[in-house]
Length: 171
Image (cartoon, rainbow, N blue to C red; front, side, top):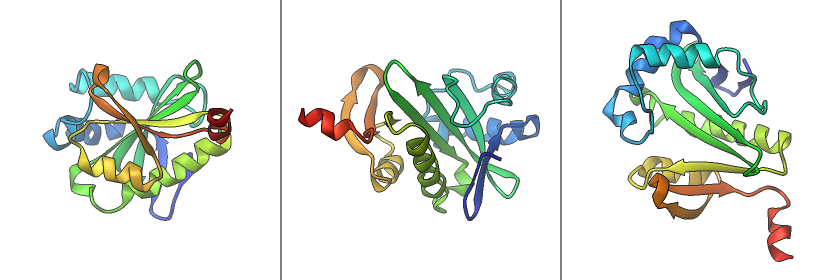
């Protein structure tokens, strides 16, 4: 486990998580707001195998983790480290039957604090579909600021700026 909160933990994806991941990746309530290219069982197993050894807060460009209540997967966290853009981009999916329980807010609060401690010089970014009102509300509640709408990726860009970003903008 990399990170724990009162009710949740963030850990590596495991092969036994494949059915849960496959289920929410193929549920329209989740799928419609995501950019997954392939949601087949083989693709899910490939993702789990590729990310099973990820180290949270490392500089690996793309990472995926299981979000668990106890040891039951209730969602997944995507973490993208981009040195050239000076940012960490976060994405989250909560299983439809586990939504509206505060899990997203709880884990993302802890994740953003951990990222800020590890990388105070990097912006923390979220890309959110314009129709995804619950995610927009969640990220605004977490203190993310809507920067713009990016047509090229059909998403709002939300940001928590690096600690020194405000000073640089005033210079």
